[in-house]
Each structure stands twice: as structure tokens, then as C-alpha cells.
Length: 120
Image (cartoon, rainbow, N blue to C red; front, top):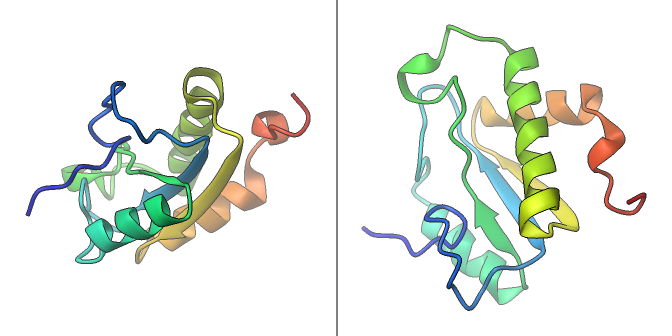
């Protein structure tokens, strides 16, 4: 199946690029479209005014086992900063699939508050 995910394909001409970003973090060896429910999640996000973002991290695909939660959290932190600075993001939500849950929780535990859009 194909996906019209606005953030995934970075379609700047898309009529729907929300300031609210739902970030889907896949599990071990996952990359783009990591779950059978990815497209349904995208549709649900659009219905409530959110964009779905699917990051590719160093640990994606065959990169698993060659990194750490710390590196993944750093990469997710950079993604958040990018979305704030270049995509006008004001709110974030994480959906973690499998070990992607660990990534999301670890980031929330150790991440910087510098992307707190309420303080900018």
C-alpha cells in the first residue's frame, strides 16, 4: 500500500501540514511504515488536526544493535528542534511501537526542555 503521509514525503505543497506532530517511533529494525496500522494512524491524526512524522534514525533498519537509547534520544531531540524551527511545530505526541516505546520514554526522561514551545 502507498501512503500520502505529509511529513514522511516532505510535501511542502500539501494542503495539510499541521503544527501538531505525532511522531511514530518504530521498533528494532523498523523503518518507514513500521506497523500495519501506520496509515490508519495517519488518517486519525489528520481527522484531529495533526501530522504524522516517521523518523529514520541511525538504529532504523539494519542499524539496530549498533547504537544506544542515548543516541536515539539525541536524534529524536534533533528532530523535535527541526520540527519547531522549520515546520512551526507547537505540540508533540509520541507513539512507540515495540522498542520504539523505550525510545519515547527515554527521551521524555532525559530529553532537553529546549523544544518546549510554550517557552519560545
